[in-house]
Length: 254
Image: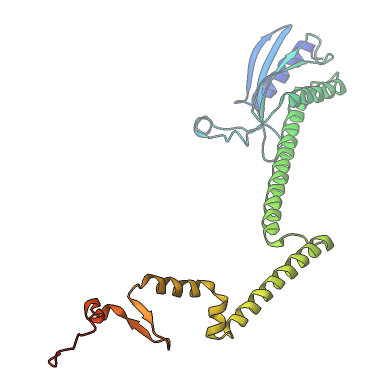
């Protein structure tokens, strides 16, 4: 029958075979067995994704799509009859502090359910499944946020064509303003129509400026006078001396 120490050694060998690139043994001294493993989302969620050295050096990881966590396992001397200690060494930006607490609580519960059996592989698989669920939830949340944003934009565009909602009160206010505007327009049209039918004399009598302008014109012309019959006479055409001389007889040549 294998001893506890042998169980731990065999488990480490199995883990190294499954995760040759992801797993790093930190200590394998009896009573101090520790190892670290980086777990990231895989398409099927079955196990941490494995990559070649060349792929690991050249692959670009989008921070928004990166869901990964590095765990450190510390196996107590009585493991697997005791629960291992699990620490989070590193995590991607998409993993929050509350996510850390949730993951560690899940692994602790899983460990207690598997006491007496080697459980590291089982716990690693549970962490992988949790990461994939977390990634799906994040994708669903982002999709919902984007759909909500697009819906709000669509509603905003539709509101541009709706105009102001009509109520009884707003319609009555518009009706009063409209009736008043029409009444004023009717008055203006009536006045314009009446003016168009006025005679020249009526226009003259209505427009005082016309009379004033004529009077002003008459007042400014000093050389103009009118005889008894109202005939206009330009006195500047007559020589004052000739008019005043009673004996003046015009030359026949003139």
